[in-house]
Image (cartoon, rainbow, N blue to C red; front, side, top):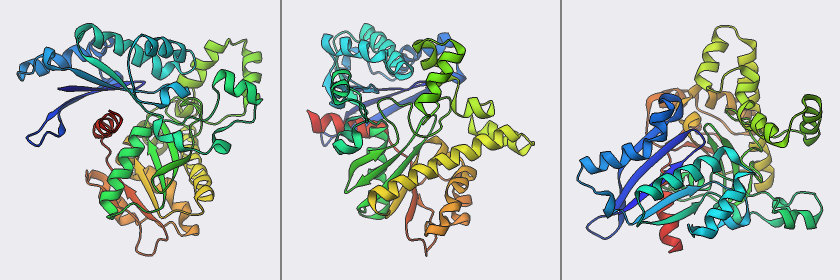
Length: 375
């Protein structure tokens, strides 16, 4: 049996997969734990709670022989799915310095799972492998070439498993995957990715998951000079600046809350700060959609995935309505009707030049596909 562990910056998701009668691995039991919804001690024990729930169903921990862990980490080393061994753990420790928000949580959970599943083989499923196809001239930053190579500084991109799943869902919805696709994956983190013929050619995230869109608590794109000015003015260390950009910025920094739903309520009650935060968020998504349109020479399909995309009729309309002038037309009636719909759906008008889809991704299936294709 296979345990799948998807550890985010503020959530823990687990699933159990086992072979069906045809010998194909299928996801069976799923559990999702949010840091914001549980006391810290219970959240830290989430892995135990999940394993205990399996035991009650008659699935013993000893029968789990493989653990697949989604790994969000910077560096070429992590652009490949790998067996987690001593070298891998050493590299993960080094990567924690660059992107602490995700890597620290993953590293802690890895240690916990290894302690209760000592005989299982652990596989790191790369969240950046999907973006390994980005052309060098797009992935490279304009810093001295020697420094880029020595310190492994380049655009790696993230959300690869989510995007892979979104493309699979989009293919099922449309019958075939169009050549030019833009994937907007919007949740606590967010990214916009340009996809040509099924492969990534550009994405909004960079060396770390900080770049690009305004996110719940992450800053997104910012002038490096502004970062330096803040460090000097506030006397900040690199570590304190990392925390500032990762946990105190984004929607939280502009609007006072990292929750889209809360900000919408605040806006309805007259908060100008909340309105500005939501306007800025929608604008930044459109900005990167525009960049992807230029990269691809247009788009046949725009896919929306992630919790913000799925749950917020208001934000979908806020992002897309201004694009009607270039022929990307959201059908407002379909958009409103999708408020409580869990099915993958097309939301564009009949006259839209570009199809607009909302899909409900399954990262567990993407993890299994990645593992089986790599094995």
